[in-house]
Amino acid sequence: MSDSLRRRLRALPDFPADLPSFDPATAPADPVALFLDWFEHALDAGVPQPHAFSLATATATATGLVSSRMLILKNLEPASSGATAGVDFGVWQFASTRTSRKGRELTANPHAALNFYWAALGRQVRVVGEVSVLSAEASAADWEERPGADGQANPQWQLYALHPTEVEFWQASGDRHHIRHRYVL
Ligand SMILES: Cc1cc2nc3c(=O)[nH]c(=O)nc-3n(C[C@H](O)[C@H](O)[C@H](O)COP(=O)(O)O)c2cc1C
Image 1 (cartoon, rainbow, N blue to C red):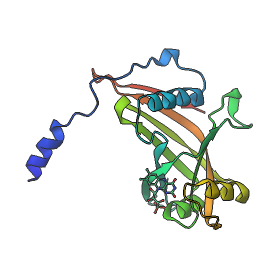
Image 2 (tube, helix red, strand yellow):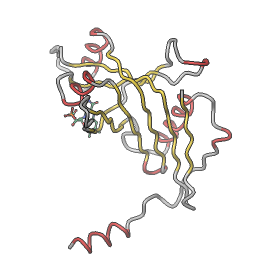
Image 3 (tube, helix red, strand yellow):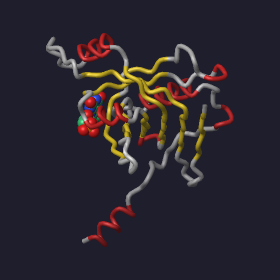
Image 4 (tube, helix red, strand yellow):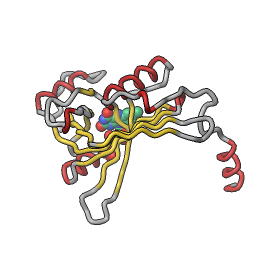
């Protein structure tokens, strides 16, 4: 059984045959601009849920137990100030229940990594940084804007902002010379 599963797994294609090109030499200086360019490309290509990403968090314990789950990107704004050398890695917003596992982990250890994957394009983007909480008003507004909102308030709903120190773009290539382009503050 496990041998046949192993063979079936090996037989699956890792990436589609037809992949877009990416030349880091022509990439913009701003990772937000490149993300938005890749995001538009994913939308145009009909990638399902291109705004979904995996959020990794960790406990603050010495063992640093890691967990991850899928979330939806709520907004991506330029940082208002503070980014070094005029480079702006943006503010990446997501929302969840403060008392959830991820909420508790973010309270104890406000660091996270987001991972977007657009399978049809063989593209992945990793965003790593510190997480802060946004205001009660902004969180309430996000709760109200959710599809199916019924007007009931949810004081546990929290809008979070990730401030990246690192954004890495990864493009699969048919010749297996996959391309990485990393921005670091
Ligand atoms: C595509 C997708 C999008 C999701 N978006 C959200 C989201 O934006 N916020 C959220 O709290 N949970 C979202 N969920 C559910 C989470 O993945 C997760 O199961 C839940 O928040 C509990 O996570 P935790 O126990 O690790 O804290 C989404 C699930 C999927 C599959």
